[in-house]
Amino acid sequence: MTAPASPQTADGPKAEDSGGGLDRGVLAVAMVVVLGAIMSILDVTVVNVALKHLTEDFNTPLATIQWVATGYTLALATVIPVTGWASARFGTKRLYMISITLFVAGSALAGMAWSAESLIAFRVLQGLGGGMIMPAGMTILTQAAGAQRVGQVMSIVGIPMLLGPIAGPILGGWLVDDVSWRWIFYINVPIGALALVLAARILKRDEPRPAERLDFLGLVLLSPGLAALIYGLATGAEKSDFTLPGVLVPTVAGAALVLGFVAHALRRGNTNPLIDLRLFKRRSVAAASGTLVLFACAFFGAMLILPLYYQTVRGETAFAAGLLLAPQGFGAMVTMPIGGKLTDKLGPGKVVLVGLAIVVAGVAGFATQLTPDASYWALGAALFVMGLGMGMTMMPTMSAAMQTLQHDEVPRASTSLNIIQQVAGSIGTAFIAVMLATQMRDRGLDMSGGMGAEPPAAGGGQVPPEIMAQIMTKMADAFQTTYWWSLGLLVLAFLPALLLPRKKPDTVPVDAPMPMH
Image (cartoon, one colour):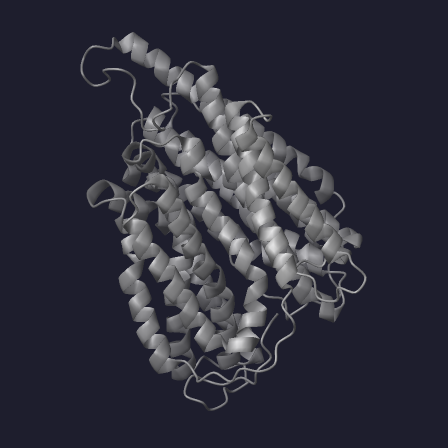
């Protein structure tokens, strides 16, 4: 899925393949790519702190508004396999500019959303563009820098990847509190416009070439099938009744489409399936996939509701909640580069097991302290530990899948794992959001108007302090129980992780598309 063009700068001449520093032309290309990366990476994290305000503004429960996040990640998963084909068919510059245009259009429309349903639809449009920005941008930058300077290129693009989990919630919180939640989307418009102008002026002219056949049938079967299946299961869990027509129909239809995709992908004559399911016969790929599914479900779901605890139980502003999330990002920043080096020296299996153990310790420490008056220092320390573990889990798990593959199998496996990660994250956000809503309902807390719904007469002096304290305790208990479910999924991730390769790789594949989300 990578684009094997000869290394060239944006102005046309070939880049030097020496190990020297990056020249002005490559740095200019890097600036264009980083602008796109900033938008797409921040948008993954910036929305979470706005969920409380969105539930209030649209008078919509969390189980519905979480599709603002779930729909976005599902759209990302949809376009990941299309990117390699589209890069070859239309050219990377053209694809990059199209993806930014889609993302900016989706952002502008999301900012103007008049209902929860319209916002979810516009977030899907955002995701269709956002999913192509990073892969296309990385291809452009790698071509410009040359093979011998890929490490330097990755270090540049890695900056927004590391800062995104920190800056996203803080920026989103500030915009939500002091401006409007609509500006978490509008802010992408000037950045995207600048990126488009610079891309048109700086990036090298496209040279489209013949592309391998796109598995269009697989795309039509898998994407709607997953969306319908997740929607049906989430709605059934929310209503505690899977026999309702509005639940049963999408669930059965989604399951049928997904099973149809499996049959299609395994068909003997299908040489280029959307997801190459035959690769999962390899123990390393199957184990990495299982680990990734359980980890992504638990971790990304837990991150979705984390700002809600600070805002609803602790009464913090969105900006304060964003600041309180920062320790997790700092923890990941510390261990991501270390995890990569240890994977090459010790083997991915050992690193992932240690990473998972650290994440479990962090989540357990966080969950045990989810009370209405828990120490922010203690919660921050637990979040930092969670981040440390995350940085030693995600990338090493990806590396484990690649370790035993042949050269031509690496891009297909990388694409499949990226899709699995996004889909698992979508399932996790839906599952955890519904679980939290269910826990609230079981405790007699009416959240039908959204997570932002206040108890009757709260703030008006009519509710005695002891009653308010009881309500906050019940809410904290609902969050705590939900986090125990998340912890259970993380513990289950140890089972497939035990099957990951524990010896260091003989060779490191260099042509796998870098996982960006």
